[in-house]
Length: 628
Image (cartoon, rainbow, N blue to C red):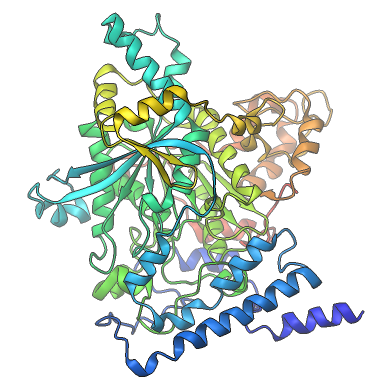
């Protein structure tokens, strides 16, 4: 009793304890984000803020630094003691998560002590986790040329003279790199590059599995981080998906404001499709946080202006609402590592990103994609943490996209924080990457509008020239370079055994993670038994055993789209006799098309507020259906 009282006293006296607020209805939330140009009433952003002249350190402010250090040290000590005595703040947290959360909590209150250079240096620190070498990285620099872009980027494109440069890097898992090298050597030895497209003489499935290219867009609140700093994400992404990853370093705010970052991402996309000749259906756009929002903005721009869309998208904790309107900014502030932006314009990411165009741009779908229309977009895998401040807007994004006919797989991970995939000591990070593998290699080929192609000889030559040169270097899984130069890399790879420990996660004993999404739908089959209906992409031989395994992973909680639950359970009674043949129609939303503009979409227009009214009584953004 005394121990429980002390715990309540500790959490009750903590200034950062979560704020309990009344949940808004789904109807109200969807209405707020259905009108671009209209500022939501629940927005937490002060629109009167304007950009500042920069950071100015005064001598008499020097005392604030030791005061800040003492404050953080005492807060950290109290949290560590509380963790060991009364337990963690979230039930599945280890001591690492307690320390991270303690260090980052309320840091925005002290933003006046740093400038943007300090923040960028802090974000670039890596190499703290000693992991074995896992991938080959090739830095790339290319010139941005005029591409006659349409729409919002027409003015940005007209300014290009072919002299500006962008940089990025190719990330290729070692196992994939060795396989590609073997293919290059065999084709050169026989002198038959045509074998890349001669499907009667090659292992078609193997070639097709190596043909995926992932365009990765890093996060960092639009003003920090880089492709190299996010190698803890891009390296395992290449390993698990067996795909080549290209990570772009777009221009950062405040030196470049919206839509400059989107222009860089669009230019990179067209470099892959036009210059390197990668088929768009072979591309998967991926990104975390602000990068996830840029990836979604890329899809919206391509659709709006009649360009071919990529095959799919993977979004890790995307920041899709710059107005900060959702309640999780308050309810999860005590747990997440992302600090709530401070009350001033100094280091405020939204102010730096939008600059003086804040009033006109903040609700533009390319800046805040939650305000956009999602008709015709490709399938998406969206992952978020239950304890992150962006949780509510990500769930709302998934609902809205599902209502527009997009095939969305939303994964909510219990007690996880913002972009938890970047922390290799978290078990859920491995689970998330396994799910990425299943999505890219198994589910996406079954549901995307156009199947991925086997790359032809011209494309393979372009990619080989871009990735295999003297700039290549070997890096550890934590992003630290261990060797560089083509000759040294070749020597190291010749004598090194590839670490295959991660393949244990992918054995046949582990059911496909995406296959668990609908396991809680208990609809009888034609024989009247309670067997689990099979998905279109996998056959479940023993559903009860799979369900037990799924229930034994409490770190992962799967959420279904409220629309899917409503539609399936409302019509299930009339489809009991032929359920196996019809299940695909109700477990997956209609296959998205590729309209040249929203008005040309084959999907019927949906009045979101009216449709949301029909299922608001049974669900909301906060009350979702989980597997475990």
